[in-house]
Amino acid sequence: MTALTPELTALLDDHHVGVVATAAADGHPRQSVVYYARVDDALVISTLGGRVKADDVRRTGWASLSVRGDEAPYPSATFSGPASIETGDLAATTALIFRRFMPDVEPPTEEQLAEAGRVILRIAIDRVSAVTHLG
Amino acid sequence: MTALTPELTALLDDHHVGVVATAAADGHPRQSVVYYARVDDALVISTLGGRVKADDVRRTGWASLSVRGDEAPYPSATFSGPASIETGDLAATTALIFRRFMPDVEPPTEEQLAEAGRVILRIAIDRVSAVTHLG
Image 1 (cartoon, rainbow over the protein chains, first blue to last red):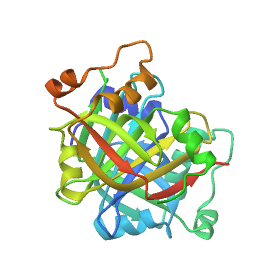
Image 2: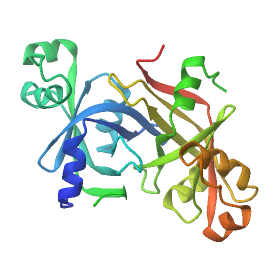
Image 3: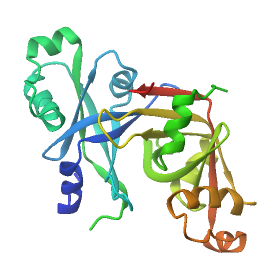
Image 4: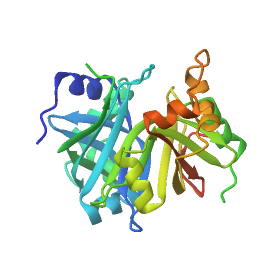
């Protein structure tokens, strides 16, 4: 496991939007913008279980997340590693993500998440690459 | 070729930073933050010929770029398609990119670009996906 430096930890904790990438079945990269939260050395993303990125993770067991600052020169890094899709015990983890960008809204319950078909995409940070303008 | 809608064209032209993704040799996605410019239905990125993302493009002939707005709810889209590495006639295209974020600085000459080992990574936009909060 790659140790997150204080600068990398701050980059992750100071922002709440990133770009997740997975490998599609045809081998091409697939990217989408997501809200995320950091839990120790892992990144968690709330998505729908039927989304193609969830299929990619089930098939390949790997994903990456690119995070950058909002101001030039845009400090940034890519965090990647083994990834999995979690379908139970979602409420507490999902609340961590939702509270980062909607602090005043009650996060969804376990039942609401199940009905909506939501899952957690979890990335265990194994590699940090493409680090720019940090520290 | 996917027609760019006015909303997608505006998203690309109103921003100058995105996340490029390529497929690494091990099949995992590789991501990094880059400056870009749009030229008709293509996206151009200035990078170093020795970078791993340039190797990925030479090997796979494909790349994608994720672009998002700066304010919640973060309008975004991913543009992907056949990609190539250009090693000559770089100055005019590179100037298009440099002028977007350094309008007051004279862009590098052909000779300077060659000496620095810079190349152009060009993506012909073939697919637009993961479109959120646009139009």
